Image (cartoon, rainbow, N blue to C red; front, side, top):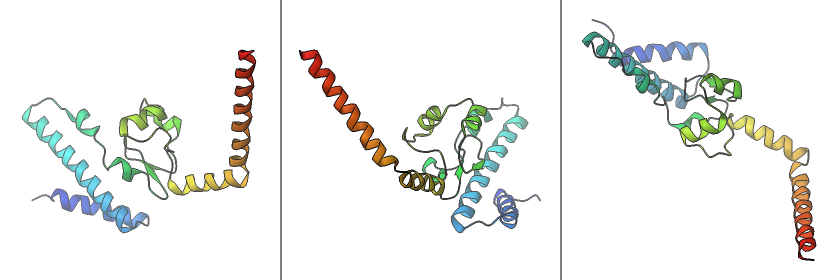
Length: 157
């Protein structure tokens, strides 16, 4: 008799662990997503054998993990295809026919959420602070406010 889905998922994740270092959370997520993917494939295969039209396009659009767990410390998992990246680039999102805004809306992320690994986001934030961006931003806002008040005063005259 063939292997069960659990055994197949365990074998696949075990092979993945042998090729790259994974912590326990990553192993758990990999097992869950692999098992879910195998279930979807098995259901699609059963439908094909039964002669039922394949609805796997709808089933495959479901995320393999919770959106809030897709952004991790050193990687971000694309919820469309399941690939891991440091950052979801506009080029990759275009391959799914999406923009960054559409991806965020589709998966329920805030529009200001960076689509990159947390470590990369922190590194960029620190680099910006080192360059003095917050102070420059405060100055620009103050200048814009001052110009706006000057315009209103000129309009009243």
